[in-house]
Image (cartoon, rainbow, N blue to C red):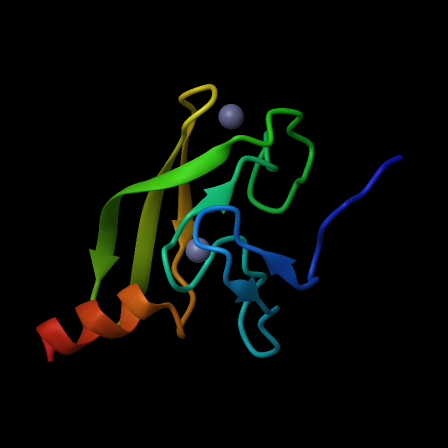
Length: 101
Ligand SMILES: [Zn+2]
Ligand SMILES: [Zn+2]
């Protein structure tokens, strides 16, 4: 069975939160509450061609206020690092934005 997750609701494997798709932003690939993601992209964001499917832990933050934040994820299975744009309603985005204001 092949299941290709795209803009669909999913349950976060880390904290159990129900993650709903964004309607106004780019696609969401991580949990807005605990910021964990899943290793589903191999050749680029949204490619969904990875076979690892490991849990991606947030290990750092990049970016600037105003232009959006980048979350650095590292896969707990294979160690691959990915950069993911933080969504506007991520708990982290809101917390950091308030620091810079
Ligand atoms: Zn979560
Ligand atoms: Zn991986």
